[in-house]
Image (cartoon, rainbow, N blue to C red; front, side, top):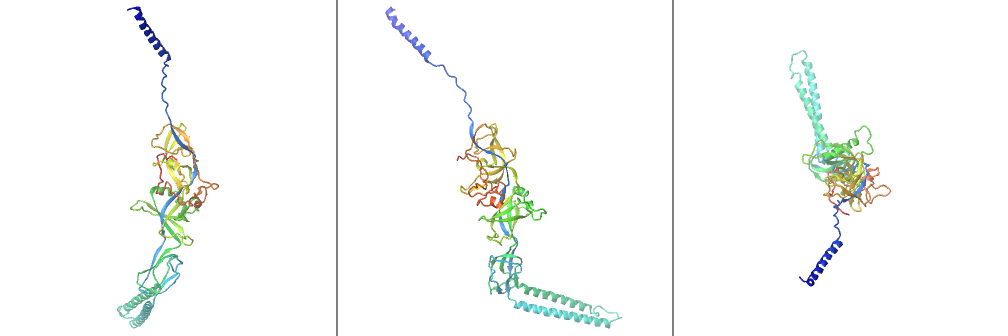
Length: 443
């Protein structure tokens, strides 16, 4: 190949080598890949510390009269007199006259019975006299009982006994024509009018005892176990006076309240529901306004014994299984079962409960960091990133700064402490569990 033809090839080779050298010098060294860092899930929590708390169990019961009586007509007769003040809702004392029935026929029967009684007494005296004469005539002689007038005297005694019984029955019927109140009572209904002719057995009045009224409350076995530690302290038969914390209050739907006492426990469970019946009592329920009337549904608030270490937690912190998630000092999740004591104070402005009082079975006095919004994806021992909640820690409102519409749970008075709220939720020991959520609900 001629030298003139080799020169372009040489230049091309040089240019290619120069390009390769430039590319080699310009290209950076490869950067080694760093291993991915593990990301920790952020979890919102609140700080909770134990405090002494006295829970209140709220149960639902029905008022029943202590004594119920239907005043019925003892005979068929005309009503001669009745007091116009005996209207339903009127209080009457024992032996107060209610109705007077016509007694003409009864007076005739009593007069006839009196005549029979006097005749029998005369016959008895005659038989005794005849026996005395017969015994004198038969003195020293062998004679029979008939001759000694013994059967005749026995028959006269029997006739007198019969006449006395008829007289007492006639007199009792005459007295029964004047119907009176059998005990201190409240008139529930009146179905008789002056001048009315009533039949025997017809209901004229319905009365209930006015000195007390009973409240029948069905309770489960778990509720009774909690109540049994407090209710014996309220028994009126105890030798020592009841302590001030053994207190029972009865509330109606209008939030009027009456102090009550524990009366007795029905010894057998209901055949259908398998629940037991606890009976409470309220004294003088009709002597003040408003009245606590029979056959009404009421709430019974029973203050239980004080719990030394209770936590007030937000309702969202509890799962459906009554468990909470706490964060350890190593920022690891821990699942712990709790026992519901009572719903927290009620905020009527937002119509929602502000928390739940609970107690821990393990390490009950240890302060905790409680997860506010537990998730289904959480696992025990999982490392998380704690984030303090921006909401204020739940606490019971005090006297200086009361919550709107909520009872003062620090007040020693049960009525101002628990009963001013118009919707006091039942406790965890109640027959209606509080609604909870185990999914996150963002504010």
